[in-house]
Amino acid sequence: MTVAKPKLLIVEDDQGLQAQLKWAYEDFEVVIAGDRASAIAALRADEPAVVTLDLGLPPDPDGTTEGFAVLSEIMALKPDTKVIVATGHGARESALKAIECGAYDFYQKPVDIEQLGLIVRRALNLHRIEAENRALAERAGDENTVLGGLITAAPEMVRVARTIERVANANVSVMLLGASGTGKELLAKGLHQVSDRKSGAFVAINCAAIPENLLESELFGHEKGAFTGAVKTTEGKIELANGGTLFLDEVGDIPLPLQVKLLRFLQERQIERVGGRKAIDVDTRIVCATHQDLEAMIADGRFREDLFYRLAEVVVKIPALAERPGDAALLAKAFLKRFAREMNPQISGFSSDALAAIDAWGWPGNVRELENRVKRAVIMADGKLVTAGDLDLQQCAEDDPDVLNLKGARERADRKVIRHALARSEGNISNTARLLGISRPTLYDLLKQYGLQG
Image (tube, rainbow, N blue to C red; front, top):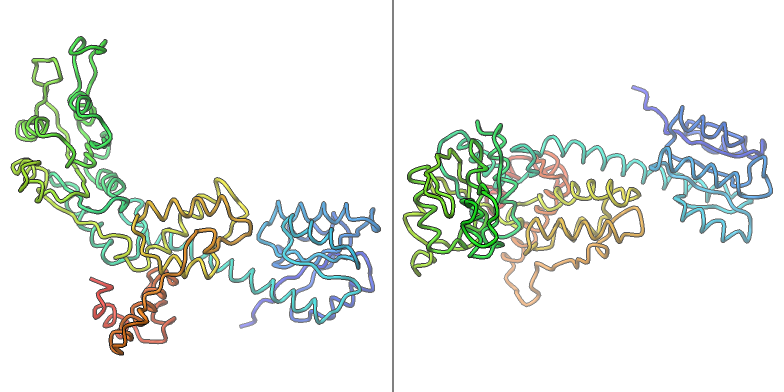
């Protein structure tokens, strides 16, 4: 099968130099353009990966106005194109301006064919890598999305999603347990979206964010005149979620007197608004979440045991991001794609040191910390690739130099390399095994041995 040659567009008005450059790049499909109009027409028709651009084009062959106009149009139409501009001796300002405008690199006239060839091939290689990264990211968006939007390739998190899907249509209360920032609300929304209540409302309330004296009114509503400032009858969150799902985040912060009223609702499926005497039937599915140890709170008398068992008919434990091999890099790429589109379109991906740092960092703040770091990095980054410095991350060392146990050191090294390969291949087992140079069965054995797969 014949492999198509990469396309190179040469924008140059000197016919002798056109022929010389075309002869030098026999391994490319070379397209020649001598002015702005033909250059843009060739860009649209041929979509070259690399462009060499002489800034001195007619009708301004002694200036740079027309050349910069071509560069600007290329960046607007095909920003992933690698443009290499030609400058005369002493034209450093023009070269720097071209780089600021999006050019990949520059070369000086008179042309050194060998030197220019190195720049062109390096540009082509980068273009290929970026195209592969974009293709991987697009595939990851489909292959690694579960539960209507949860992005994961980690077996631990896939298992959580499958559990939630199985209980979605069961008439049971679900409790999500996990550290702050692990995505409990996203999972609650996912549960709602795959349940037979999806046509109803999804209503969320953070019980820790509302003062104790207002929480009862927020949950159960109030009648007009029930207290100072109650100028009209207002439905509470439970009533608003009738026919749908109510998500109680940080349920461990509900005060004991209100726990009694919530328990009564779960038993009778009726509420009374604050200041009201009429029982109102409400059909609401309860999903709750907490990062607290409710069993310890029960032992201390701060949480009712009977309420716990009503809320925890099904308990789902959510692993921390550090316990989900490969997910940090996968999520980081998804966040970068979203934030770059909204705030910094020139960003095209992560540098290799950024991916290594993402894989190595422990993520104490979980997915929320990752999202915040990527968002800040996209805003602050100067280049097209987000670096470890932009993320404000240092490569964390898993190896302890004072530990001289050879077996332990080998295991730590194996675990680190496997996690890194999983992140680079976005959780794909076949690609991970290929990166590591081992067979799939061997990789599965290692994943099980090191606790990287459930």
